[in-house]
Length: 98
Image 1 (cartoon, rainbow, N blue to C red):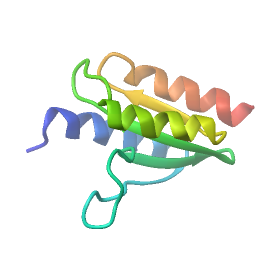
Image 2 (cartoon, rainbow, N blue to C red):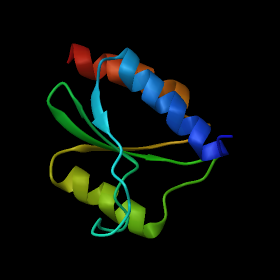
Image 3 (tube, rainbow, N blue to C red):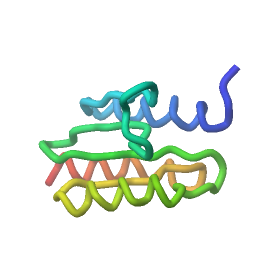
């Protein structure tokens, strides 16, 4: 049975696959740096980090710091939760048309 966050991750993966986005989900075991986004993707040549949260939750300070580093390096960072998951497909469509 999926957790509430697991359900959102599953939907995010479905949206990414429907838009033919390259992505992977890094495992947070062993040598992985803390705070890395749940999903790392490449959309139309643009690096993207996606943090997924259940309900209306927001990233922790550590996660937000990593998302900010991605933006500072020229990438895109998103936090997707139940409130904004529907906007992900619209965003991907705009980026791919870019």
